[in-house]
Image (cartoon, rainbow, N blue to C red; front, top):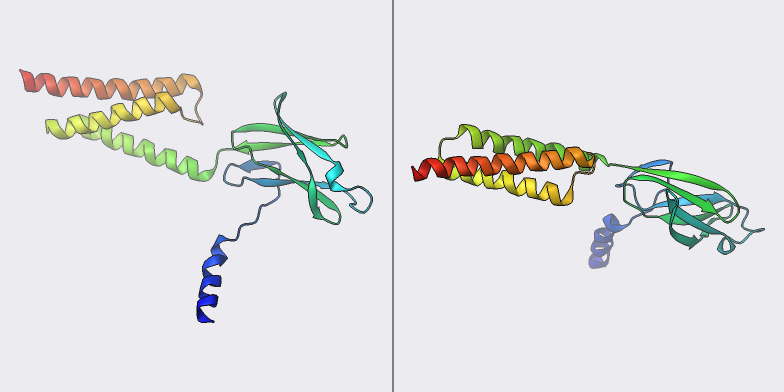
Length: 182
Protein backbone atom coordinates (compact mmCIF):
# COMPACT_ATOMS: atom_id res chain seq x y z
CA UNK A 1 0.00 0.00 0.00
CA UNK A 2 2.85 2.38 0.83
CA UNK A 3 4.44 1.70 -2.55
CA UNK A 4 1.19 2.55 -4.33
CA UNK A 5 0.90 5.86 -2.45
CA UNK A 6 4.55 6.63 -3.20
CA UNK A 7 4.06 5.92 -6.92
CA UNK A 8 0.93 8.08 -6.94
CA UNK A 9 2.87 10.96 -5.37
CA UNK A 10 5.55 10.62 -8.05
CA UNK A 11 2.92 10.98 -10.77
CA UNK A 12 1.35 14.16 -9.38
CA UNK A 13 3.91 16.63 -10.85
CA UNK A 14 3.52 15.00 -14.28
CA UNK A 15 -0.14 16.04 -14.57
CA UNK A 16 -0.50 18.81 -17.14
CA UNK A 17 -3.52 20.87 -18.16
CA UNK A 18 -3.75 22.95 -21.31
CA UNK A 19 -4.93 26.49 -20.68
CA UNK A 20 -7.22 28.58 -22.82
CA UNK A 21 -5.61 30.86 -25.43
CA UNK A 22 -6.09 34.45 -24.27
CA UNK A 23 -5.30 36.68 -27.26
CA UNK A 24 -1.61 37.29 -26.55
CA UNK A 25 0.39 34.29 -25.36
CA UNK A 26 4.07 33.47 -24.97
CA UNK A 27 5.59 30.38 -26.49
CA UNK A 28 5.88 29.04 -22.92
CA UNK A 29 2.05 29.00 -22.70
CA UNK A 30 1.66 26.74 -25.72
CA UNK A 31 -0.13 24.55 -26.57
CA UNK A 32 -3.39 26.24 -25.61
CA UNK A 33 -7.08 25.71 -26.30
CA UNK A 34 -9.20 27.80 -28.65
CA UNK A 35 -12.76 27.75 -27.29
CA UNK A 36 -15.99 28.44 -29.16
CA UNK A 37 -19.18 29.00 -27.16
CA UNK A 38 -21.78 26.60 -28.61
CA UNK A 39 -24.80 24.87 -27.15
CA UNK A 40 -23.61 21.31 -27.77
CA UNK A 41 -27.11 19.91 -27.33
CA UNK A 42 -28.12 21.81 -30.51
CA UNK A 43 -24.86 21.74 -32.53
CA UNK A 44 -22.36 18.90 -32.20
CA UNK A 45 -18.75 20.03 -31.82
CA UNK A 46 -17.50 17.48 -34.34
CA UNK A 47 -19.46 19.30 -37.08
CA UNK A 48 -17.44 22.51 -36.56
CA UNK A 49 -14.01 22.94 -38.13
CA UNK A 50 -11.41 25.56 -37.32
CA UNK A 51 -8.71 26.71 -39.75
CA UNK A 52 -5.48 28.23 -38.46
CA UNK A 53 -3.71 30.75 -40.70
CA UNK A 54 -0.43 32.64 -40.57
CA UNK A 55 -0.97 35.81 -42.61
CA UNK A 56 -2.90 34.37 -45.56
CA UNK A 57 -1.22 30.94 -45.49
CA UNK A 58 -3.36 28.08 -44.17
CA UNK A 59 -1.41 26.10 -41.58
CA UNK A 60 -3.89 23.34 -40.70
CA UNK A 61 -7.57 22.52 -40.18
CA UNK A 62 -8.91 20.84 -37.09
CA UNK A 63 -12.29 19.38 -36.12
CA UNK A 64 -13.40 20.74 -32.77
CA UNK A 65 -13.93 18.53 -29.73
CA UNK A 66 -16.25 18.80 -26.72
CA UNK A 67 -14.94 21.01 -23.93
CA UNK A 68 -18.12 21.19 -21.83
CA UNK A 69 -21.87 21.49 -22.40
CA UNK A 70 -21.58 25.00 -23.82
CA UNK A 71 -18.13 25.05 -25.46
CA UNK A 72 -16.13 23.32 -28.16
CA UNK A 73 -12.34 23.32 -28.24
CA UNK A 74 -9.41 22.97 -30.62
CA UNK A 75 -5.70 22.92 -29.78
CA UNK A 76 -3.41 25.71 -30.98
CA UNK A 77 0.27 24.71 -31.07
CA UNK A 78 2.25 27.12 -33.27
CA UNK A 79 5.35 28.28 -31.40
CA UNK A 80 6.71 30.68 -34.02
CA UNK A 81 6.44 34.36 -33.14
CA UNK A 82 3.73 36.35 -34.87
CA UNK A 83 -0.02 36.75 -35.30
CA UNK A 84 -2.15 33.73 -36.15
CA UNK A 85 -5.75 33.96 -37.31
CA UNK A 86 -8.26 31.19 -36.71
CA UNK A 87 -11.53 30.91 -38.58
CA UNK A 88 -14.43 28.68 -37.56
CA UNK A 89 -16.73 27.03 -40.08
CA UNK A 90 -19.56 28.91 -38.33
CA UNK A 91 -18.17 32.20 -39.69
CA UNK A 92 -16.62 33.40 -36.42
CA UNK A 93 -12.93 34.22 -36.27
CA UNK A 94 -10.25 35.51 -33.96
CA UNK A 95 -6.50 35.89 -33.61
CA UNK A 96 -3.70 34.78 -31.34
CA UNK A 97 -0.45 36.71 -30.96
CA UNK A 98 2.58 34.64 -29.95
CA UNK A 99 5.31 36.67 -28.24
CA UNK A 100 8.75 35.81 -26.92
CA UNK A 101 8.62 34.21 -23.49
CA UNK A 102 10.33 35.60 -20.39
CA UNK A 103 12.66 32.60 -20.09
CA UNK A 104 14.02 33.18 -23.58
CA UNK A 105 14.67 36.86 -22.86
CA UNK A 106 16.50 35.97 -19.63
CA UNK A 107 18.59 33.42 -21.55
CA UNK A 108 19.49 36.05 -24.15
CA UNK A 109 20.58 38.50 -21.42
CA UNK A 110 22.74 35.79 -19.81
CA UNK A 111 24.35 34.91 -23.16
CA UNK A 112 25.11 38.58 -23.89
CA UNK A 113 26.64 38.93 -20.41
CA UNK A 114 28.79 35.83 -21.05
CA UNK A 115 29.89 37.24 -24.41
CA UNK A 116 30.89 40.50 -22.71
CA UNK A 117 32.96 38.50 -20.21
CA UNK A 118 34.66 36.66 -23.10
CA UNK A 119 35.33 39.98 -24.80
CA UNK A 120 36.80 41.39 -21.57
CA UNK A 121 39.04 38.34 -21.18
CA UNK A 122 40.14 38.66 -24.80
CA UNK A 123 41.09 42.31 -24.37
CA UNK A 124 42.49 42.51 -20.83
CA UNK A 125 44.08 39.12 -20.02
CA UNK A 126 47.72 38.96 -21.17
CA UNK A 127 47.99 35.15 -21.22
CA UNK A 128 47.93 34.08 -24.90
CA UNK A 129 46.33 30.68 -24.23
CA UNK A 130 43.38 32.14 -22.32
CA UNK A 131 43.01 34.92 -24.88
CA UNK A 132 42.97 32.36 -27.71
CA UNK A 133 40.36 30.23 -25.94
CA UNK A 134 38.07 33.18 -25.26
CA UNK A 135 38.55 34.34 -28.86
CA UNK A 136 37.52 30.89 -30.08
CA UNK A 137 34.42 31.22 -27.87
CA UNK A 138 33.62 34.58 -29.46
CA UNK A 139 34.09 33.14 -32.95
CA UNK A 140 31.92 30.11 -32.18
CA UNK A 141 29.21 32.40 -30.79
CA UNK A 142 29.39 34.57 -33.90
CA UNK A 143 29.07 31.55 -36.19
CA UNK A 144 26.13 30.23 -34.14
CA UNK A 145 24.34 33.58 -34.31
CA UNK A 146 24.95 33.86 -38.05
CA UNK A 147 23.53 30.37 -38.63
CA UNK A 148 20.57 30.41 -36.20
CA UNK A 149 19.82 34.10 -35.71
CA UNK A 150 18.36 35.90 -32.72
CA UNK A 151 14.58 35.92 -32.65
CA UNK A 152 14.16 39.40 -31.13
CA UNK A 153 16.46 41.12 -33.65
CA UNK A 154 15.84 41.69 -37.33
CA UNK A 155 18.23 40.19 -39.90
CA UNK A 156 20.37 43.32 -40.26
CA UNK A 157 21.26 43.49 -36.55
CA UNK A 158 21.62 39.71 -36.24
CA UNK A 159 24.10 39.55 -39.11
CA UNK A 160 25.93 42.61 -37.79
CA UNK A 161 26.18 41.20 -34.25
CA UNK A 162 27.31 37.77 -35.46
CA UNK A 163 29.85 39.20 -37.89
CA UNK A 164 31.22 41.52 -35.19
CA UNK A 165 31.74 38.63 -32.77
CA UNK A 166 33.34 36.57 -35.52
CA UNK A 167 35.63 39.46 -36.52
CA UNK A 168 36.69 40.33 -32.97
CA UNK A 169 37.44 36.67 -32.25
CA UNK A 170 39.43 36.25 -35.46
CA UNK A 171 41.35 39.49 -34.90
CA UNK A 172 42.21 38.49 -31.31
CA UNK A 173 43.47 35.05 -32.31
CA UNK A 174 45.47 36.57 -35.18
CA UNK A 175 46.96 39.25 -32.89
CA UNK A 176 47.95 36.79 -30.16
CA UNK A 177 49.48 34.32 -32.59
CA UNK A 178 51.26 37.07 -34.51
CA UNK A 179 52.91 38.24 -31.28
CA UNK A 180 53.90 34.65 -30.42
CA UNK A 181 55.47 34.13 -33.87
CA UNK A 182 57.63 37.27 -33.72
